[in-house]
Length: 117
Picture 1 (spheres, rainbow, N blue to C red):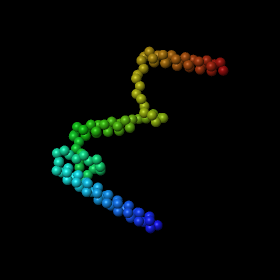
Picture 2 (cartoon, rainbow, N blue to C red):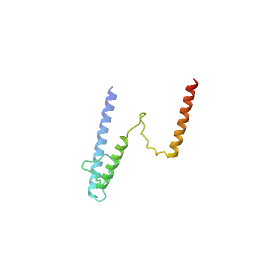
Picture 3 (cartoon, rainbow, N blue to C red):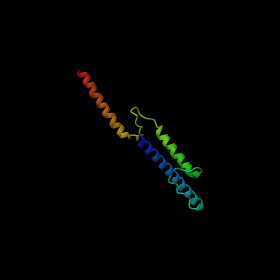
Picture 4 (cartoon, helix red, strand yellow):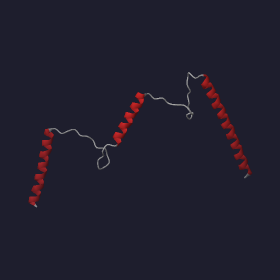
């Protein structure tokens, strides 16, 4: 049991030293970045306090319109089975007449079967 306790204390000490080393490196990086302010920092880690991201008004407007389009798409009325309804092209007069004559023929067959029965 003492072996585990000693190993745990040693690991914690090493972690503390590593954290101190990282803090020293962060300080050195920030000093160099402040000296060379024209190039800007390349922050690959977490965002530092005080850093801001500037977005132009035109870019904000584009983002706003894109988000509104996404919401409009999500709110589209859906059919009974849950899929998004698709707008269809109107049928031509010839196509409607063809469908109507086929339907009349179907009903004629149904009535003929009913008469025969």
